[in-house]
Image (cartoon, rainbow, N blue to C red):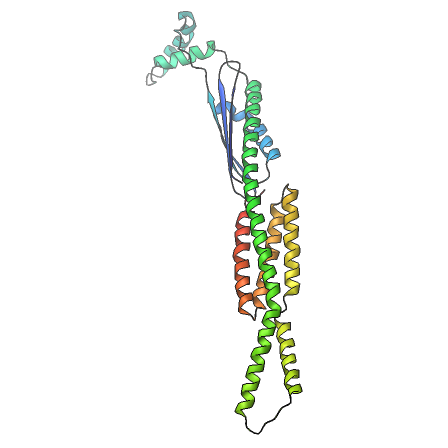
Length: 292
């Protein structure tokens, strides 16, 4: 599921660590890091924290390390002397070397004078910032999960209503088939002169035709399984937790029942209901891929 979370934390030296987490839909957990050099040592611990908190999604973790802003102080001549002496010695051996700039001298000398947080503190503060960003990300994903749950429940109710319609259509379709058969039978008899048939014979043939037609369009078993799958979906959505794979399996079962319903639809109304079911089930399939 998609989501976003971010947090910042400050080290004892005044440096700041800012962490952003973004996740998009994916069937598996895929974590990508974009870390500055200062946080490279904390990557393994950060990966473990994300893996323990999330199960699915493509997660992008971006971190920024902001050093404390301060005006550089001029180095003490005695402190700079060894660096300048080393430069002079190297340039004597290799005249092609580029001389040190003022900025490089200040960075080398200033870096030795400034206090820097050690790796342990950086890892600790980065972990704290990551935990807060993870909490925000999980909350955002939970909100999207509530929205997806409401959408799936709406599709489930629409499918259930179509199933009720289909169950009511079957006896009406049988009655219409009986009437059509009787009309065709009587029309055929009128076209044939000198042929007599009894009302009992006509009624027997009408019942046989109706029974045969009813067997061909009997979808009670498919509708019963469809309703059972819908009830299981409701229970799973109410239960929560890691549902993606189970929901995906049930969606496949719903699609199978809708296909069977369509293949047995000798009545136009049942064919139309089958198509509507397939549309709703496909919408559910697309959303189920987003659920963790």
